[in-house]
Image 1: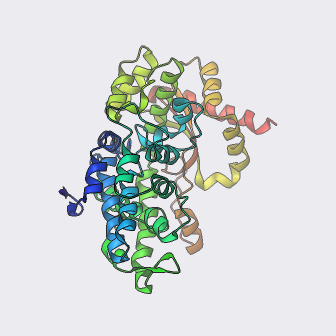
Image 2 (image 1 turned 60 degrees about the horizontal axis):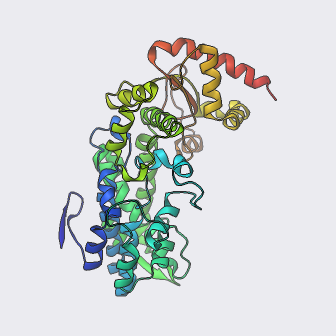
Image 3 (image 1 turned 60 degrees about the vertical axis):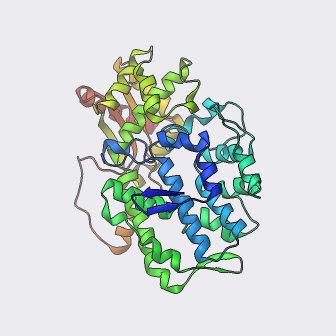
Length: 400
């Protein structure tokens, strides 16, 4: 069976991949966007985790060919590539914080843990026909436990197999960097997949690369940095993320969306827009029609040393308590002012600039993409929220 692909022209699937592809757990990924809310900034970035899963499985098979792996090992990495994202919730990383709320007391720390439990048959999604993945794997002579280990980066038997799925240079990164780069239009995020694959080798049971791969691998690492700096951590995407998280938090508080894992991204948005709670509906409609909150205040990365102790105190207090304090002092409703701690640990530009002694034009008074703490609200409330935030931070400085 062949699938037409915008990245690879044609992807050939073997019988194992075909059967896995037809499971409801994989088909569900058609309705999850790979980049969640990033299309609010980059309109073409609407590709799905389904397409990405096929791409990772395809590249894992390519690795297997160049590494001259046995048929069973090839099937293992192809299966793990196809299944590595089956545990993602709607809107993927944006909603990972709610996994405990959704799944209760199950021993699941992240979506990879849930992927492993689905692969091993320990957890069955409430979807028609779900639960057959372990049987399909066993039919082709694969141990679901080993596939589950590869999915969670915990396989130690053959390190080169793990490295193909999750390592410094793996099938996952090679696919998503190229796919995300082309869909977002950020050309500098592209990479030379084929050159890297051709130079892969196995040495002492580990995946290594010919010295000729130094340049394309460096380009891949730079591409990853570019995509984090310019796409994944874009400030507008952070605003949408926090608005969506607040709407979901409020919806869970009133007992809505109990069938969360049955929903795709758009189905979940429809649920939020039809919520019985006015504030949830308002946030969802703002996201849909891009009437987004503005940044009223931010502690930017360039000032983080000066404010490190304060940022640590804010994190200990947490988003919900900070928002509740603002709501009370400003007489605002839940969801009208939001606090956020953008995840910017992957941004490396600042250290590179310092190392090379490259000076950046002073951005005082202007928003930047990179900050450790933000406060968002409707533009009509920006000034009074800004003033209250400054007063709030002054009180925080003296609070022990």
